[in-house]
Image 1 (cartoon, rainbow, N blue to C red):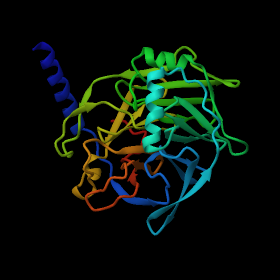
Image 2 (cartoon, helix red, strand yellow):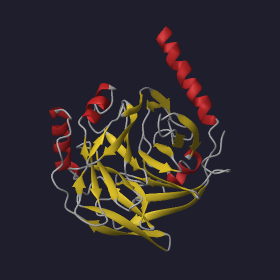
Image 3 (spheres, helix red, strand yellow):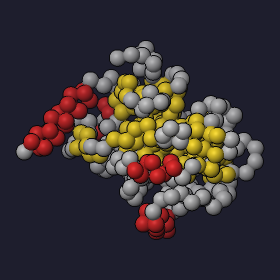
Image 4 (cartoon, rainbow, N blue to C red):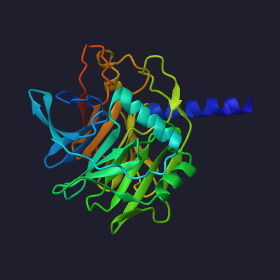
Length: 327
């Protein structure tokens, strides 16, 4: 009885906080044509354009160009070398391998980022690895200290199939990288480049967090679901997390992962015409800039209430006072 009361009090406090998050304003939405595998799973701003990645495509990323409100996809193709040993247990690796034969996308790319030298990076959920796509030269996997996966698993992350790394961000200098573990437990990892090896420093784990959280009241049949991260963005030295099931973006300290402020996009995302017949949030891609946020949806090829079946990217205006504003 005591533990049940504690859970109820936690959910009540979360619901109270949710009602206090400022709502972002939607200014545009863009369907995407031409993504071979659909399933938009990451966004990055690089080379004067927005780029995307699909978790169904192992050999390409996409550059988007706007034509009358619809984004057209131009593929940049590559051949990834064999991924390095990740340190993940055989059970997880075998399930990822089996799933790839059903859905496609053996590498399962779940996020994309860009450094100041305009090199692209994509994170493989299936292999807990990061592939660099340099402006010049061939793609190559980052050499990451195996301690990263060991520390993450010791903290309760990377334990469940299809709940591994879901997003990444990198600083402009290209020598510090953040990864988001998706759920059960969700968390934030940071690694730094030491010559050719990416290491943990004192610790790789910035944040490890379990628990349930209520979906926003606009969600039909809202219920408590696992806390999650769906993508990361770095802007003006702050980490921004896309929290899919809560329909929010949170600004966080880049060294500790501590929350500083959050904004909701539930009111716009869950108007009846934009709803999908799926019990979870579908936002999987995030870019933050001074004027607003780009949020991309992985609709799993599902149909929206208005009939739209293509991947969608929303444009939200920056909050009053900008992203650095204090509560």
